Length: 94
Image 1 (tube, rainbow, N blue to C red):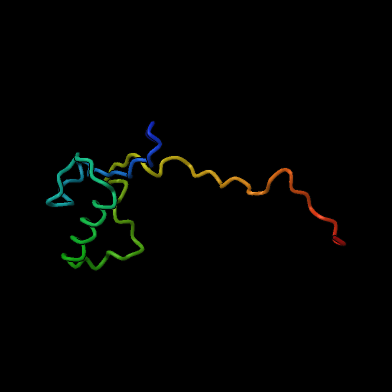
Image 2 (image 1 turned 60 degrees about the vertical axis):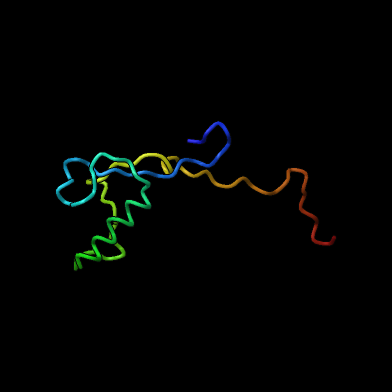
């Protein structure tokens, strides 16, 4: 969603679901925070607790535990073709 001023899209945000609050001690549930910041908080706590099951391949913010809004929700359109309609292919002898 773009703002009317033409500024960039809002950053993606995440909030911890109240039902999952017991899994993430110290994170206030139902409060929207930038997803990147929330991810840093959750990942750093995993590292401090030395969770053996957490790997870099794991998704840090589990959608079953977190809700998301803004950024990244709309499909990305392919870039427009850069070829001008007035350009013509030249015959191979030119």
